[in-house]
Image (cartoon, rainbow over all chains, first blue to last red; front, side):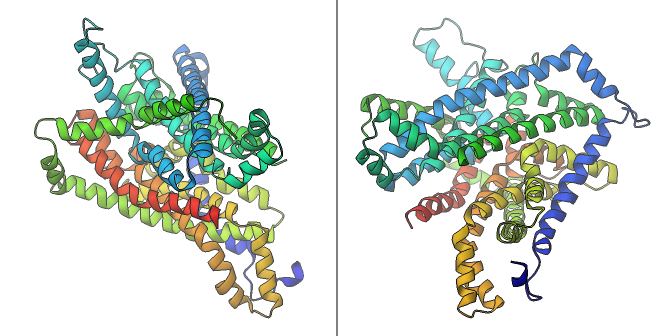
Length: 280
Length: 251
């Protein structure tokens, strides 16, 4: 291999250098700045662990962390349960020529920003929104419901987008579930269970791992949906980060972000481990 | 295989599509049904300088950051897959790190750094955030596309007497081209709708999602129409990407 490398060929390190440089300048350096900022006193004078101590001891922070994690895990699990059968039926059932259109339809809500989706849910579920009005008109409710500003509405919006992401990831993985593969499985005498276990699941696995990470990241790091739809009395982590920035307490926001980045990195490692299990 | 319950499966697909498409349908209906809505709303958007600025800003950021990301990620992914240097696993992990920690971290990071260094916030910082997030996305797309067959083809070309230049121009680059296009399209889409980082580092500038956020908070009437325009424009790269996804498989 080394003998092949002549003076005319650029070395692999040189090929990877520009990308590495960008990551160093635009990611590693900012991340270090965040870590340092999180260790700086709020008046900027001293190195301190005060912010981390406050996060660890102040029950408001612990409650927000717990809420964020709980919401994210619940949303990710519901999305997986809803999306897997959905993507499977689409991949197994639809004729090949229809599948690109089916995928595009699933992707449609993801083509608008999170602000547009949150606005749509507000239109649907607000006190004078579509659902409330319809229920009152039909006589099911005496008075309109106040839903916006509750955790329930926020969870509906988060679950919706999580299901979109999860379906996209699994459907893209399952496009290899071709008629040939299905026929081969049937010829080998695979019943419905064997079909699922030995053909569909192995193909879907990378999509499940990728979808789980994307869903976790999108839900955990979402500061817009909680802001536009969530309950101000029950803030999540991103609300506190935004609060820190808004009140000029950048060090506190930085400390919270460092913690969130560490949690996300752990989830990333978990999902890549899932991927390598699938490859074995 | 036969589905045990075809009727049930059909019903499930209909219900899920209804759930997933509900917000889009509500936005479309709202943009037409409200007083003064419909075509006039859309025509008014075309004359709204804020909206035109935001579309221009979002477009430039999406195209530029995605193009640079492809040009940087392609050689890196190729070098790591083709030559497999000793430090390849560590480098791979490093290049994927921005994706692993997410937009919020990148946004806060650039915000803290800009404040500390005294850099002005604007479309530049949004573009920087999108570039560093598009890089791992493109890197993954390239890495999935480069396999042993590519390396075998290069070796065959070399054995047949092709020079390094010819191998690069006639074998390597054409084989990487589909991944470059797919990575570019995906990065454009991700950048086009991105809000969490832009929210933090846009300063006084506005991208489409930011404009939508401002108006959603103040309850402005044009939000629904704005969202529909965003979706329709995004359908161009989205359709191209989906076609590629399914075309490559049948080939």
